Image 1 (cartoon, rainbow, N blue to C red):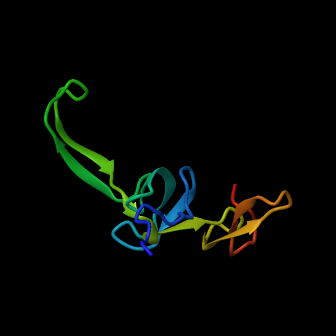
Image 2 (cartoon, rainbow, N blue to C red):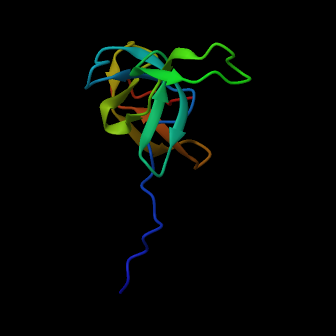
Image 3 (cartoon, rainbow, N blue to C red):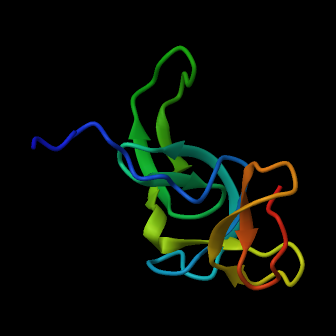
Amino acid sequence: MEKNKNLQAKLKIRKGDLVEVIAGDSKGKQGKILEVFVKENRAIVEGANTVSRHTKPNAANPNGGIIKKEAPIHVSNLMLVDAKSGKPTRIGREKNAEGKLVRIAKKSGEEIK
């Protein structure tokens, strides 16, 4: 049998989630996810993993110069912050009353909105 190379693993974090960086230079920082790159298993977190980008002058930035911006972080270095306790938590999936799969915070057992 030939394996399907286009299959992607289901990511447990989504755009808009509050996450904490658990490894790397930005360890301990919390921020909202601005963008998720599913194919690369990476996400951009607000205020974390900032890099300096040297830019030439252009229409949007007539002076050019050095711009600070967020770079993508691998999702394995991110943990969702539990809304109840405010601490990082693992994520599970369960069926709710309507039979729909929802994400569950392992620490508090609450559904993640």
